[in-house]
Image (cartoon, rainbow, N blue to C red; front, side):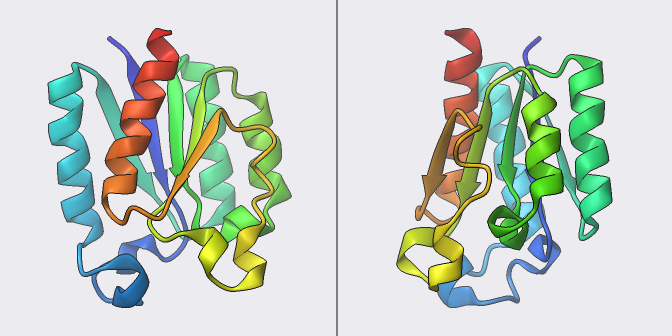
Length: 146
């Protein structure tokens, strides 16, 4: 069965409480439930993981590589803009990688416009709110099955 790792980054455990003008009122648990419903529909396995600790995020990417996970979808949050440690870990991974964001990172503060992952990911999705997650899963499945 196709296996995808969905990585949620720093502060995502606060969805539903944090900046509803950018992220809406949906919680991380609700997002994960929606992801699991889509996974059943697409006949794939999706493991979700959230941490506020950069090293744990890196370790999870390493584990995915070693376990032969087929693809990664990630919303790294603020780490997107500066974490070369995460970028280096992603560069090791050999499957498709979809970077996604709920808000349009290009329509926000100037520091959010830059992604240090952009040149190594398969593609990016941003600006569709909670739907960005489902689009990211669909994009990863398509890239894996290509």
